[in-house]
Structure formats: C-alpha cells, structure tokens
Image (cartoon, rainbow, N blue to C red; front, top):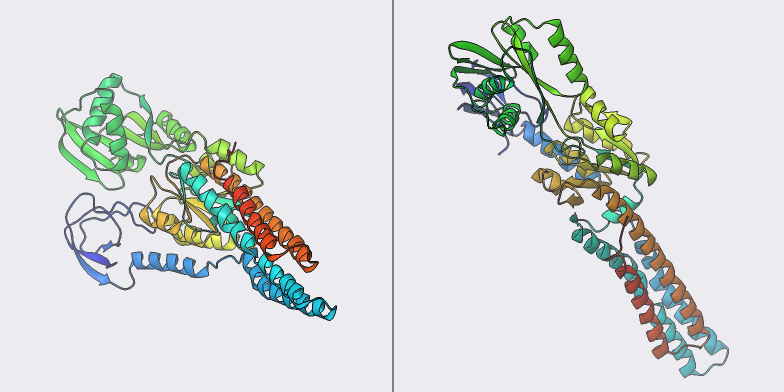
Length: 472
C-alpha cells in the first residue's frame, strides 16, 4: 500500500523522491520524513506510516488517472460515414423499386435492381479501409522494433505538429561517464586515480560507481582506505597511509575549510558551463584533482530533430534537469523551446496547455513522465530503459534506444493516413459508380457482388503494401 512515513529511529540516506527527482538528505534526527517510492541505499530504518491514503505515490497515481480521464477517443471519418450509409442504401433501394414500378418496369426487374443496389452498397470496402491499413502498419512497425499498442495512434501521430521530449535516456543515454581527470598535484596520474578509486569504491552513489568503473578499466589498483566516512549530498572521506583525503562537491570542501584557489575555480566554472558533473579530490590542505562526468548525447538525436523539422514538426524539451544542462543539450540537437526544472505535475500541465492549440506527442521513459505521456494525444516510451509505468502509459513503445525511430514513426503515420484516405475515396467511388449502374439496370446481383468484392480486394491489396514499405 502506498504510504509516507517518518523515521522512528536510526538514520539513512534517501536516494531520491519520486516527485522531485532530487537527493533527499536525512540525518540522525528522529522524526525525519520518508517518502513512499524512495530507495534506502545505506542503512536500516524503522518507519511509522503517517499518511496512508494521501501518500506521495498515491498523489502521483492520481495524476496519471486524471490524465487518462481527460483523454478522449478520436471519432474517425469511417464512424460518421457508416451511420449514414446503411439507411441511405435502404432508401435508394426502396426508391429504385418504387420508381421502376411507377415507370411500368416488371416486378422481377424492379426487385432485381433494388437488390443489386443493396448488394453493391454494402460498405465492406469502406469498413476495411482503416483497419487493414493500420494493421499493416503495426506489422511494419513491429518488424522495426516498435510496438504500437493502440489502434488509432498512427492516425493521431499523422496530424501531430509538436513533439515534446524528455532529455535523459531519450535524447541522451542517461549514463554518466568520466570525461576528464585533471591532476593539479605533483603525484602521478596513476597514483591520483588509485587514491580516488580507494575512496569512491566504498560509496554506493551513482557518480562514485561511474568513477570506479572508469578507473578499474585502466587496471589501476585501489589504495586501502580506513576510517571511511560518507556525507549525503556532499562526498566521502577516508584515511590512506595515515593521511586524510576527501572526494566530493565544492560545498563539501568548503565545509572542511579546504582552500580552493582561483585556478580551480576557473576550471569548475568552465566545466559547469559544459553541463558536466564535477567531483573534487584533495587532502586536508588543497585540491589535488578534478573529475568530471557527463551524460552522452545519442549520436542520431540531432539528425532526428532536423528530420522532424523538415516534416513540419516543432520539437520541445520538457526536462527536470536544471536550465544550464537543458540548454547545453538542447543547443547540441537544435531545440529552441525549452522547459527545465519541471516536476511530474508541471510536465503534465505543460502538455495540457500545449494540447489547447496543438496535437502533441510526448516522448519519455521515466516514472516522472507517465502523467504527461498519458495526457498527450500520442505518447512514445523507451522500452529498453523505460520504467514500467511509463511503458504502460504510452501508446507506442520503442524496444531499443534508437531515437531515430521517431522520424520513422512520423513517416509511417503520414503514409498510413494517406493510405486510409485513398482507400476511403476508392471505396466510395466504387460504391457510387456501382449504385448508379445498378439503378440503371446495367448490373445484376451476381455481377454486383463481384464488383463489391473487387472493391474490398483492392482496398486490402493497397493497405498490404504498407507492410513492406521502405522509409528513408
């Protein structure tokens, strides 16, 4: 059951709150809050449930349910035509019979013409025009690693004019990799990395794991650390050969009264502008090295955005990251419309506002994207790395990490809609011509049945071409 609570005793570190996506430090003080859905990374805790029905997770679920209620199904052209065609066919058949009898045609001829009208007017080809095209496209998409979950997703995607993207794991890989290790000491680079490895190998923090993996791949052995300590949202420290070393953020070093000279400050500012995460390493007197980590932009993200613009789509970035990071990556891919530092409900509200004057598609992967995915006209989730709730909320799922499939989907949707429209027009024209010929007595029921089935076959054959269609 979703609950929020407070710590009864003990202390812990909460990795993240599902609603904020930010580190939530908790110290030894009894009575600190614990949010449902958070992850305890380090210690054991006792929790008293205080808000069982109004937990943070329950609020999150309510957002998703609200989005689902606000989404209305699309009324297709076929549904509107079908309501009118059946009574129209009956009316024309009756009028044909009445008029031919009034003109002194024999009873057999009048009945023959009326029955032929009913045979050829049955809108089978019209009913087949949409599902055959969509099913062929769904088959085409599945061959290319795209699962289309809802029947009308492609029709909606064909008229989408704006696509909103989350950043992490969507445009980027979502994995922080070490990009720089800059040594400011008299020690060798290998010695510096062995010292850093000794400290960071004892930490469970994602940044520490990335650093540990990077150094270990260089076959460098870790120094033995004693008296290890970790301070949440700050860094780690420990003794190596009776000397104390620190590894963490700038605030951690200032708290320990370790001087940061102007040269180091300039480096920090430079790396910050490049949207890199900065880890400082030093002893009790000075900074000895800087380690930077950065998420990596997917190779085809920029090309995908450019292709979407050529198709008349305006890309938008909706992310929980800070504005500097968001702008750094948006500039790389060519997105100018940026909304940063957004909570899940704020993403939801942005999509709601965009829907007023646009047909909007949302592409995301995380649990915090689920409400926006559910509300958008069309939603696409990253299946390989996406959360269960985002995959469940989305209409379309990309099984791999190839973001260029968004362009493929848009082209497939456009072609599918064109095929549907062509099938509708063809089926209506065939019906119209066949009805006229039937009223004039140029078709009998047998020939009318053949013409009727030929129309259905033509529609099916045209739709089936979508299955093996190649998209550049």
